[in-house]
Image 1 (cartoon, chains in turn yellow, orange):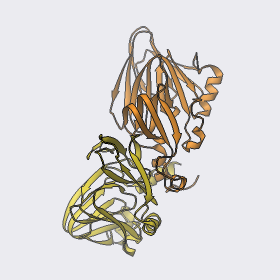
Image 2 (cartoon, rainbow over the protein chains, first blue to last red):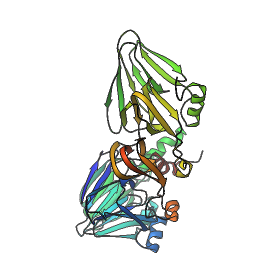
Image 3 (cartoon, one colour):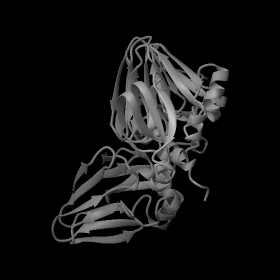
Image 4 (cartoon, rainbow over the protein chains, first blue to last red):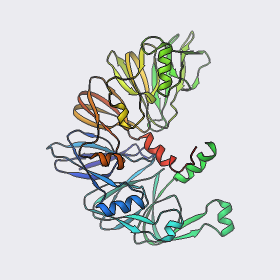
Length: 219
Length: 227
């Protein structure tokens, strides 16, 4: 299987070539176009109950599609996201990562996707009660609004709410105020996420919140 | 005329160099900048898809009633054209065959190109859920089309499936059929966020866009206050 993420960073799109017998699973709606000879099977996103949880709390679709190549020639498939921004291919290599709602696009190989309780801290900061957790040794594709930056945290790191995409489960997440109470309100920064420990964190350079705040007075 | 596409694929702008007394027809509002000796006129367009009826059809399709005609007087001049959306641009050279395009994709064309709103081949277009109108483009000369997302072309030889929200244009030589995605159920189509797909067969080129304006609109719009 080959994949290439083209048109970075604003309109990142995954161009996949599936060899004979290979498959890839993607969230419903991710397929932009594909070779007519590929099969597409729609199923619950990880089991019925798990799909419901993911949909209600994880902001994901109830359904996922698995694309397979039953022919003996390589066939192409184009996968994309609703958002305008970058896509990252993350080989999990046995690690576990937590993903914010709506960031999951697709995965190849051995990836176990579950919904985990993110804690009230996460909900309070607007990041949701639950998060999508992925583990295994396959590769997961996720995206966001804007460009994606990666930081290897060792100690403590702060990420503004609305800009967090994914973080390794070895990191502990706490919510805090940007400055003191007054500083947080006046600076407009509000709540922030404090990540403690060792692990990788992925951030997006823009937030939908930011775009919404910009557009609201113009409507 | 010569058309150069700059800033692809996310902020594409077309730099058109017109010869002396050559003209280009464009969507109202597409002109960003131009040489001072280029004359701008509004028109209802001549030929197929023209006249008052053509203008009214354009209104229905979400476009403006009038079009602008830019003519470079006396000597060659340049004009910069761009669409409203962030995205890509495509120059397609019409050579007598028909090209079917999304109505929102049209930006400009030579006056020897006919652009007619409506495409009778899509009987089930209403079902597609994307409020798309289609244009039948014919004639000779260049046509400038825009997209949301980058434009990638697929030369079809066999069968190719495209989500209806991702089609920019396709050659009329292709056979096509709109339906639900293969392997999905009606339940998943309505609840699952999958729209409809168009299945292309035969030989011809399909021009696809990497992103779906409806999907991005819903992502942002769901957080905006109701109007």
